[in-house]
Each structure stands twice: as structure tokens, then as C-alpha cells.
Image 1 (cartoon, rainbow, N blue to C red):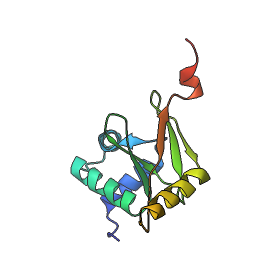
Image 2: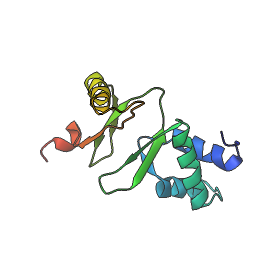
Image 3: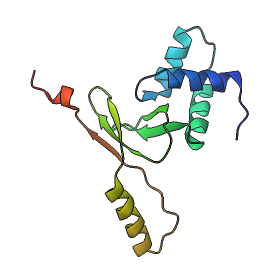
Image 4: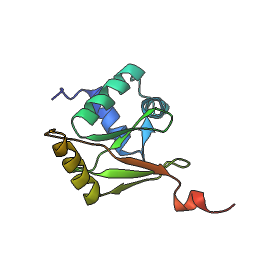
Length: 128
């Protein structure tokens, strides 16, 4: 576990106060708007560490950008709106069973997976 620096705590607090997923650059901008002198590289490192330790969710947007948000506990999956970014955590028992069975059928053990489903939420799907 990494030591807790003021920069890491600032990133953790900013992430916790942010709704939904945010990029490192977006979080960096938010921190600077509140007067923090924290550097962008430090934000990237802190977010990567928080994600590795399970304190932040991390996913790739459809255009390949890494996005982060404060993590809830336990393994879960996401439904993510491509338009507004609304994120809903879901449990998917069928996915869990399929992943374990698929891994086992090929001789894999200790299988892990990530499932993020991108679409349009009900608000963004409404006709204009």
C-alpha cells in the first residue's frame, strides 16, 4: 500500500465528491479550480493507485479514455450512458457464472473480468 500523501488525499476527496466517472484531466481541472497546486502526473498516479487498491472504479470510455470514480465495495458491473455519463452499478450473476465456466473450460483458474455496458439512458433516449 502506498503512503498517504496530501496529494493522494486531495485526489481521493475530489473523486469522492464527483458524481459519476471523470477523467484524470477533468479531475485535475476540478482540483485547480479549487486552488490546489497538484500536478497532472500526480493525479494520474494517485488515480491508478486508488484503482489498483480497489478504492476507485476505472473503465475505458468508448473513445479509449480512462475514467475513474470513487468505488463502492464489492465486485460489480456498470451500465454507462454514452451521452450524459449516467452510471448504474449492476450485479450480473449470469455473467459471473459464464466467466468462471468459460475460464474453467479452457483450464484457466483465478479468472477475473470487467463488464461495462455502454448505451443511452432513458433520459437521453427520449425523443426531442
